[in-house]
Length: 146
Image (tube, rainbow, N blue to C red):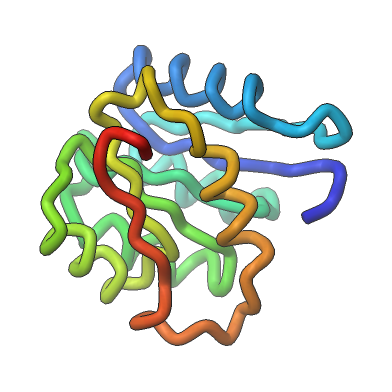
């Protein structure tokens, strides 16, 4: 991971956008600069991805113009090997597995996101992992510890 990290944060909740951004900023190493671009809809995220390259996409599953695992597939077709970390309000292991099968690199429960202590580490892990990692070998991170 380089010293400049570009993240696309896709979530329609202003509160979750704010909290996630603050957590990332608080947890980043002092020698890493993070630039977060926010998108509240799937179509806005797709447009942002067409215009700029990102190191990682953080994706909520429930957006006004897209639902569930289909969001992962839609973004995967655009981003290629750029890591996608799903942020979900669910701790359901079967949902985590479905998102990984659709191309997500990691799954993080947003509840309770305010107490998350490792969101930046999840981002760093998926960015540093070799691109050839088979879908079945992708980590799943669930539960309150994010």
